[in-house]
Each structure stands twice: as C-alpha cells, then as structure tokens.
Image (cartoon, rainbow, N blue to C red):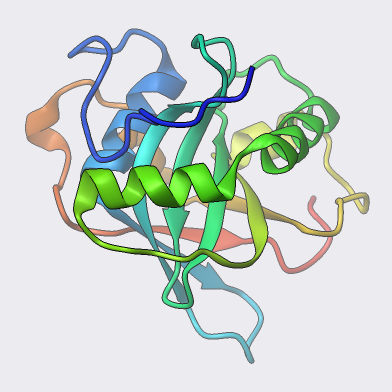
Length: 189
C-alpha cells in the first residue's frame, strides 16, 4: 500500500546512535543538509542538492525506505540510494531498487507532506533524478566497468569524507557544511 503522508521529512528518527555503516552515513548526510555534486565534466557546473529526508518510508510499514531525498535549485527531486563500502549488494540490485523507488513514490503526496512539514509549497519539476552514492571502494568491489544505466548518477565520496561520515560521534559531523561528492564521468575502473 502506498504511503500518502508522514514521510518523516526534516526530522531525526530511529535510534540516536545508529549501528550499521550505511545508517550512520545516512544520518550524518542528513545532518549536514547539503551535498555538492562536483562534476568531472568540464562543461557542467557543480550542483548543490538540499537533503530534506532520510530513511523516507514508501509503504505503510518501514519495509521500503528511500535512503536520502533532496532537491536542486530547479526543484528536481533526487532519490539517493546510499551504500557503504562493506555492502554485500551488487550494483544491478541497487540500480533495480532505486528505479523501483522512483516509479513508486507519489510526488503529489510528497509535495503535500513537504508543505505540512516545512510550511513551504514546492512543486518538484521534471523526472525524478536517481543517484547511487557510495565510497569508491563499493564501486571497485562491484567491478563496475563500462556498463552503467542511463538515467542514474553514480556518485562517490572523497575518502576523507567517507571516513568522517562513518563516524558515529555527532561532535565530529560538521553540521550545515556541504559534503562534496564526485560523479563518474567516464568508464569506472
């Protein structure tokens, strides 16, 4: 059953100290509030994504959750699937998962809940942007070569940010300071 409200936007929820690597990274990225996608393509400017939700449930229960939700300056909605370097999931599974989330989310319900939460009207524009965000180690471990799916951005952390985001100590998370991530612009090695 599709969720129509209470997407848990803009709030900390769940355990205060997360146990798993991916949950720690989710929480910390949410707390920073922004990520900046640094494109390695010369012609494209950097892109800031405002993060407004993490572990956003899609169903009535918490069986399906979007790791991170955000939007850019044109109000394009971003669904970001986060993977830790130790994740055992294979990249095709993650691509299928994020595509399923993009097809399943109710944009209208999300916009209504956004208004109820932030007292600001928003209309998400265009198609839903899909991104996989992981440390480089995840991509290397998955043997990503020349096959990437069109319509999905493959993003990675700088190693120093990856380590900082995996820290479960809130004092070491730099609040309101964007985390820089990079987009693969060529075949992944």
